[in-house]
Length: 271
Image 1 (cartoon, rainbow, N blue to C red):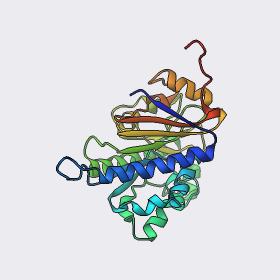
Image 2: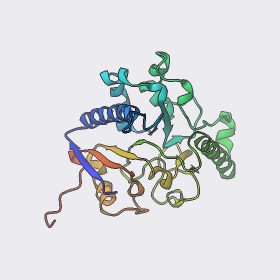
Image 3: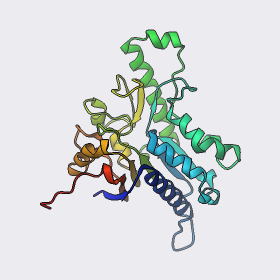
Image 4: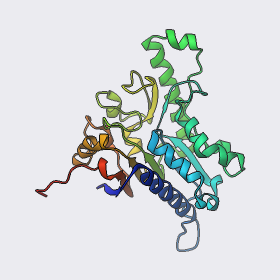
């Protein structure tokens, strides 16, 4: 699908737009009816990720009046990727999302804890983590990835489809934990994979794969800052470019980039 680009003046406005759009999309999906007045879907599955733009958007959602109008018992949250670190580490994407929004919804009784589908943390001792070999790390990562695959299939079937994926992109063009120069972007026979030696700290991660992410009904990228303009230019220019993994993203119904002015590629005067 051809991406649509929406431009806002600054990072805060991008996050606010992402928050408003997310709440509206979830509310509309939950309330959509067919010609006979029957619900189109009983639940909505949302992919979250880390990154400052996405977490800021979650914080803004927490204070948005629309948040109280949503039946959160029918909303399930998943992660596009996770840092494979101990459960209490501040690096955890899921912990950041909980602090920004999810824990408050759970505390109010609006969101069941069982609707939060976290990737497994690293349960090894600090000494075991420090002394682990590459092979041991690979085995631990693969175990965590396979456990998430099993949960995906159990909840959503053999070919999971998400209703909304809210993603971010790094200055190098990576999304989730699919990085340029790493083979995980080319994997097509898995739903989730372990990522060792990530170029961005921390080095151990688990990520959903590109084919699974591309099947989301709606995919939105929240992207702010001039440091991302070069990558975005390449992503918008050519799909499925392994040098800029975000170019593998897609949406079956919507594919949007919600960006700041300085993140936008320079216009081509010849166009």
